[in-house]
Amino acid sequence: MAVSSTAVSSTFVSADGDGYELQMGRWSRRLAPLLIDFAGIDSGAHVLDVGCGTGSLAFTLARNPAIGRVTGIDFSPAYVDYARRRNADARVDFRTGDACALPFETASFDHAAAMLVLQFVPRAEDAAREMRRVTRPGGTVAAVTWDSRNLVMMRIVLDTAAVIDPDANARRARYFVRPMTRPGELAQAWRDIGLVDVVDGTLAIRMDFASFADFWRPCEGHDGALADYVRTLDAAAKAKLHDLVQLAYLDGEPDGPRSYTATAWAVRGRVPE
Image 1 (cartoon, rainbow, N blue to C red):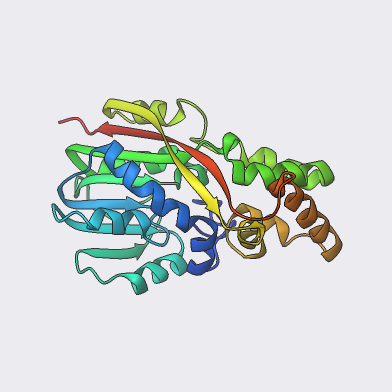
Image 2: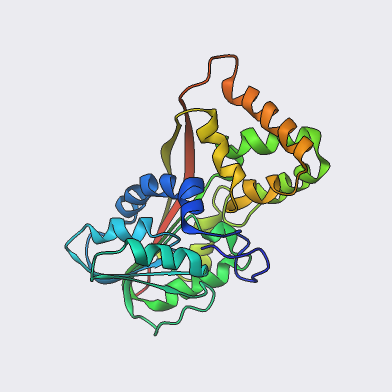
């Protein structure tokens, strides 16, 4: 889910779909098949993608002909518009809405999933309850969030910035204690809302960058926590951060490709019958 930082149901800063694709969409496309496999969502008349962003999970679900329809919902109109423009499948639709107040009837979906969204929902438990409410008895409710404390991409920038800027240190502290990003939090929330057969685990992808320019480019945009911070800096502070982060990226070697592990917490549960 994504919306401006003033929205009560999300703290993710959004601007445009291209910016999100550069900042996170390219990684969510890698994560989506892993979440679907973990959740065991291999069929269903209608599946809900909560916090669909630019559509990575919804489009991956729709590759399975055993899934009849997929609905994606996100707080950000810009991301929903982007997903709609990319969609050529009549079985898939996207709409704007709030994860904490889903505009759907009770038990109207076979399964519901949320990818990389709950950590940006201050009332994440409310969003989880809504996912349970709109999923039929026997259906699966699943989610995945980054293991933020060990997300190398974020660590390189935020740890470097925190050394030279007290404001960055405060931002770092907020980022790494987001809801549903610590061991066991997702599973406990799933049990608290009454789901059964709850299973938690971890999923991992590689974040591959072609060069430092490729790594730094999302920081120059308008989407996500890093860009939100970098654009508060004046020219001198931004240049200093750029140069220090570049040293961390290069790590004593020539510029070129780098690959970092990104681990996520995953959970699935079933609505009681």
